[in-house]
Length: 60
Image 1 (cartoon, rainbow, N blue to C red):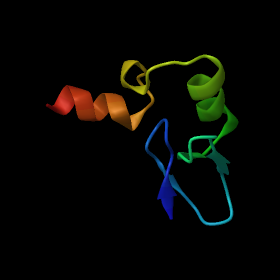
Image 2: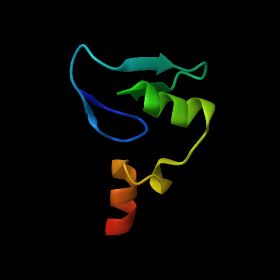
Image 3: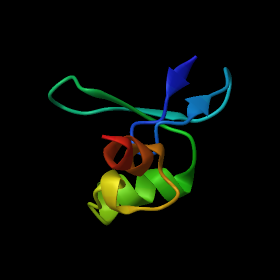
């Protein structure tokens, strides 16, 4: 069980998508929404209300 690289939500076994970049870094995505926001739109997860990353930033 892994976490989404964008929103940090848990990914159930058999679901999601794994992307391996040329430098060897592995990215896991729970949905197309997360994949698009990170790779195509190059957005910061700490600025989106629906991501767990924002909740971590606000807690500190």
